[in-house]
Image (cartoon, rainbow, N blue to C red):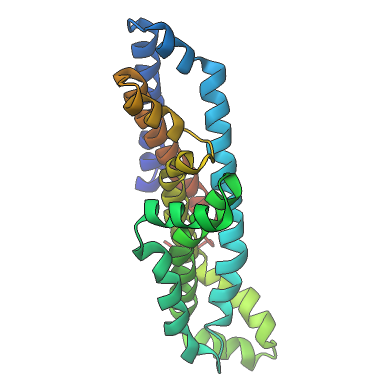
Length: 242
């Protein structure tokens, strides 16, 4: 068993142990009626589902925009525009996340859709940058060899460049997913739902158990998404690449 597989197993075990400890703590904690209602399993599952929906929709939109754009910006004749596009994409991540969410809410209205728009702007940079970096790192000799045996530019892109760029691209996607999970907690400030409701409820009503449980659940969800991303990286990496 190589180090990567051991790392995945240890990370999964850590997630399961942490979740088990949280569950045991909540089952044995002296909860008030308000805390008990707020931490009801059905309620928590509803918040978790909302959180995942916001995250996954944002991730799909980021992939649909950033990956094709990253490919286009590495093509001859368009490469000169890459620094300008990356500078624009960097604005979303450079701005404070809560400020971006609230400003967009006043412009687009409150709700999950606005939360998704703000998350897309916040997470597009890692995927765009890693797509470009992955393609730029492909050995030019391999591209020339592909063209030399009669492959079209499109065939070289899909059969040579993209497969070799996959590890770097997946790393950017995993980074974006973790960012999305964490930032999605801010959706609660604009009526977007999600696990952030537990955190704001705990703060506003001085319910420390709810606050701690909500924070740990968001952290566990982020680590779980990271684990899934690492697993996909290991499976999707072309054979022969380390």
